[in-house]
Length: 445
Image 1 (cartoon, rainbow, N blue to C red):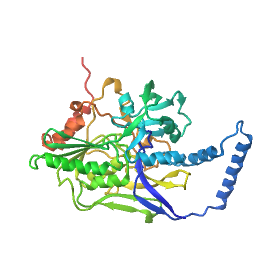
Image 2: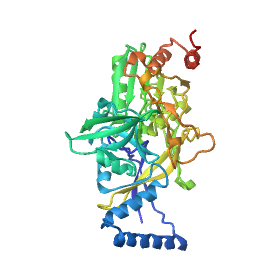
Image 3: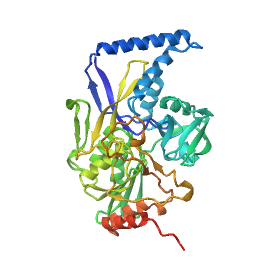
Image 4: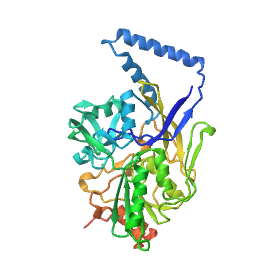
């Protein structure tokens, strides 16, 4: 039996965007089940028949089967799930960078739907939805007990229609209602601007099919606009980027590397290990690079940050990343049967680090100044906090700041990146300043 599958990386399966990869491989092995397994399957069949015949209302056979499958998968880890045919089609559309919805990346934590990040310039971000918000109800229906796919499906709908989201925010469990109108979500995966007249700023919001082309265009644009002797370097902003396509993360890393391994993926069996290396031709022509990350930077973002950090090609500034170090394989289940989203491997940085439930530690940690009204809800708990996550030793880490000031003049991480590239401050000076800023201040008399 041969099943064509697609590798994928990402923090969440989103209402606004899904995460899928294009690096195909074949799964050819079929493992014989022991007799005990077949006895357990008979038990499942007995329960199924009892529910069909005796439940108070006649249930849908298809619904029962899909729910059982999804229960089996979600019991493995937070990122494995079953996608019904509609969800599978939606995901394929979303990875092309244009779809209908609210524009929210979500995950499931302790049975509740949690926002990983709202996508820039979407109805959700304009309405005020924030990273870390827990969506407790959709159109006044509790999300408790819903699968992630079910919750996502309820948030989708026709463009121009509205949906009411009830969110719980912060340690005080403040509840707020948002009425949001669905719209066509056109993801600009790459946004650029000149930082001053000597630095190229590139923000990557997610890794979809458009990302590498956007990076390549941005680099060419800056090289034509900034004189080579004046060009200080690039700021690559991956903050609150939840991930996406594996091949795109590899291509983006390759844009700044001349040679060397970018990432490896390792499955259950040694023969399943795959290594991905840079091809000659650093598009950035060796210009200095600073990468910005935070608690909302996950998966494909962490691949890029880890590769550039291990090769000492970039300085990483910000806060520890999310820590999603696993690969999901999309296995189509035949016509009109949807697809299986199954965790099949872990990925490793070039030095052999697994960032699963640990994240990427920045070279220079800089905390943002958070407004009083947002304190306590400016961080993400990370992969290590997700129930059923893949374990990674004793030193797992959770919780990292994910706040980015909307006013760039107050963005301490961005300012530090520019100062480093311009030589205004050294890395040691930035670390010392950050340490002083983070130290408790004495109370005024």
